[in-house]
Image: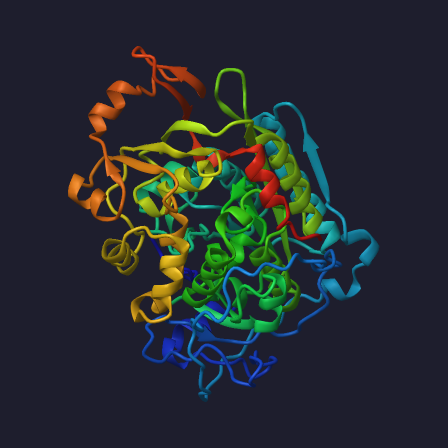
Length: 552
């Protein structure tokens, strides 16, 4: 897959970047330099190997009247004084010009841009309706953002772990519409630190979009610093639980090309770090760098995964809202978000489409997802059987969504069985895989204690956070039936092992139905065919979590 930079310079500025050695990328001379609270610049490439480069964003215009930042946070005292995860950065000379950006925001009427552009909700929304809304998005964006004609457009869909959402064909349809208008269109799947797609996977997900127009995000070497969420902001949003800053390192192609429009496509569903997925997660996780991923994921782990799941506004999302407001103010973008629910036949289908460029666009979609995608139990469940699809989930890093999304429903002493025929490794990246193999999945207290002293944990905090997120905290048993990991490997990280063939014989996905199933021997299990599409929790757990909801 091509790297996240166009193969030509038709969009304007990538050619200049490609001609300069990566090590020379630094603070844009024409832009304001991002400094931390000590006055230090961020982004120097020392011996950390993160590849983060620093560049300023020019012309920081007022954000289109986004909703005010969260306030009235509930104080949480989970842990204080955790080791700072990022060393202080030193200055370095150099600079690269930053492309001028459209000044549309300066002339926009705040009263017309502070609300969602449009939404459509129905029991089910079919493909032709969604394709018509893609066309409407392009028409409204041209008017609202004062775009004369589309020349250079960026599409930001999720990666194949969200393929069930239809984001692939939605992206393909937008590409065709824009290409027919003569626009040069590029696509960056918002991978985060997931493994980049192969050309075959791109064809499977994005259909006819040319391979040369699809670019892999490189979370270590393909990012540049645009600013920092200050430590005092992070401390405020987490109620004092976290005391470090979040450097904001983003994909170079995103922040240096003079895009006419950036379209974020995604599925809003409960999420372990941000409460609900999508919206500006596409930028700060999907196109984020090592430092951003590490600081935000570790902050989430310290705050507590069960304090985040299913809340509209979590501390990390509040920090991302701050970053979007302060560092992406001039980006001409729009969000196209979908919500899905099961029909009577057990198929996931679209129930809502939400389009706009403000926080309310996310909140409307998240409220709908909260109503449709959270299954509430009066009593804890003794056994959950979850299936992670082989064509989407190849590592426990992503397959552990089964753990995240069901943990609040499982009884003390209960069991979660994860049937994962595609799983062949633990981490998406070699260093994360090695970290999981070394330490295994541990409780929050154990990880925080080790994190104070262990250099490898401090080097990749997002991997360290995963050790917490994938742990049952000693409450219940996690059993894995993987396709390509051995019993010894599974048991070495603290999980139990079940042979895949045996698991599939007993809990045959062709026979099981979503919800309660009684097996021939009388065993009762709750079966989930797509754990990544929802959240399952007891009423008591949801009420405990609700006290951590921030308020936009």
